[in-house]
Image (cartoon, rainbow over all chains, first blue to last red; front, side):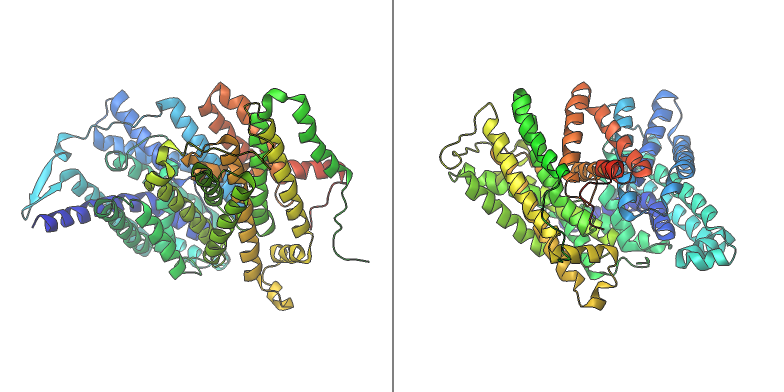
Length: 290
Length: 320
């Protein structure tokens, strides 16, 4: 019974973890599919959201939920600004240039975070409403993790509606499928991209703020989780909401289960899964143009 | 008239190799930094073959550097401290693993390759971390005791032997690589770089060439790692780190890809800057590094070699 209980606990933790990965990576997935742009600095937007929430809570005394909104807004604004000023110049660049450019941004963000906040992990005080455990069918489930999943369900429903039932969503889908034809149809692909980039950065910021309790928050955040974000995108495919969601949940459960049951090989599991999946889809990466 | 590029040396190349010899006499107190530069230069050279000539973006090249370092380090720790055989063993292991993993690399496109190389690098880091009874884990591998080179030259504290040994190895390997990229094989690599889709039409297998050049690159990276282990008589787990893969890529791009000389040149500039700036504050160094990278991409695509070529127009032509 204990083993089944712990198994459910592992799956539950894995799902919560995967939910966060999804929230942070979804923006990367869309921008990668849309512009073929390899943005290794995506994690920096999540980190920015995390720090924005910490500052809002500890220095300005703002409660947790409004602080999440601030994280969303700050990262979105930063994304919009950087897209306008810097990223836009790099869309036509080679993959190598994009990689170097975004590694450069990542290193700068790490140094800046260390300068302003120091190298230590940032603490987060959750409202009492969200701490503790809930008893469901004899199982003890963390309230905060349930809250995380609820947020992701909400985000997924919103995004699905946005992508599948609005005019803007149709433009995004058209641009991912065939940007040239989309331009020919009078869709302003650049504007679509700006908006999705902003939205993706904002969601990453929200994920970063929500994840302080689960993923932690320190200046090395963008590098530490880079593989995970890339993996969600690579396996999930671009331009849909469901693909990255499924990929992120599988990844979350595999990672937590691997670290729980075979701690001696630890993160190995996830890298092995990654390479195996990439080999099973040699042409890439489902839904992505070669 | 031969259509192959000649192996004759021009003035730039002679000057280039006179510099480290001059440095040996001019800066005797900086020989340790000098050895580090030469080793990084060799490592950057190995990446140049993969990145500059085969256009494979690798974020995990440190895997081979680390393999070489641990091979040489472990041999020496267990009594087999003869330097040259350690180099050969490291080269062989790195080449073997490079060859095996190359099949995973050549399959995909840029993003896939980037992630597979990244994943392989991280796996080796984790393996070295977990197998701490063999590798020493995060504490590093100590007790590496080197014998004398040819039984004559010991690695002393003044760093003279380490410097000259590194320089000799760099020189020999560099010339091998130089001959390689000017051979028919090197020309076919250029063909792959310029028109990957057309190469099969003239009967050349892109796949085989990428496998071959990736293996050679891994082998040279292994030699560089072995040099580091032997000259410092220590192996830290950071030899497998992502930072090392990123740093070496930055050095290469700073120097300029696709010239062979770019790697060593970029390594020298990078490490002298790092020695100066990181002593002020390591955190700032990372910031300047990032900024440098962004500016390089936006404004100076060819790196230092590109600038030199543009200035003189007489330098060893980038094989276009």
